Image (tube, rainbow, N blue to C red; front, side, top):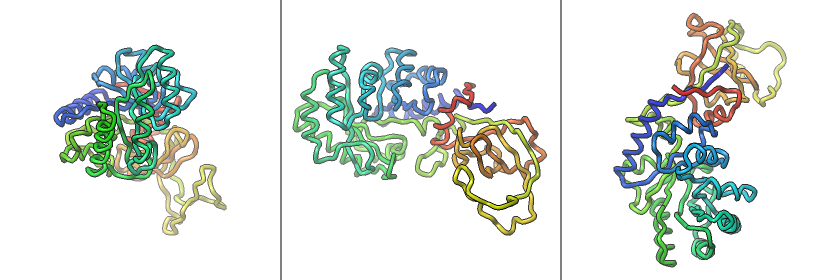
Length: 356
């Protein structure tokens, strides 16, 4: 059976590295836990590291976090759907918002639960995902400030999440100026200016983040130790925090070119024929995971001489031509993963999760 391993020693190293980075630059940061897809053992270890806040985009995951540690500050990092308003107020201390009607519902529910629910209002800075437009800023905040049971705790933005727009010093200055505009107009303090995710870390190191931008949400760099832009290793951080192991269920020397009439596969894939491969063979292995678990494009074999050929729903094919004497049926093959692939694997009930 395939399984994931989380290396707690490496994760702790990365957490302390980032904690020092943000602390030395006088910035707050929250850990994004959505990668773990609510796995209780992993969340317990994450909480034991001592983050000040944990962010997630699934309310069921925040419920587990609150069950583990009722005092942990939780942030729901997407605008809530109306049918989960009650749960958002119950399990999230803070939520991201960009719709006035949704905040009104949060206000009503907060009063029912005798709570103050905090909101971070998201601003559109060009990536065209969630966020209100700048010209609507004053009117929007004016309405929200009138609502009972609601505390405006921040203004925030997301970049490089949909359209690939990169964060920059100019973008973050714009976000900071929006916060100053609100404070000047309403004579209210906005504690957090939440400037983005792991993609902004290089700007912090280069001293290009305005002083007013004081809050960040970090997940991918914590778990993978990589720069988001080019996936290169982050100096001083550990890679291989998370690894996937899959078992070989068949090994054979087979032709490189399929035999017979070709059509599109069930996954929509068509084989590209290289005429130089006619008559050639490759030593192939099948492992016990497939597209149901992860797309091959997100897999990185630990062994550099192993490559991925393709996949069907429940099996992935590897080329072991340079390693045929090193593996046998029943052996486990180790992989690192890209972030989007790891999300799918963590969400799979068919993959065992282990801590080391």
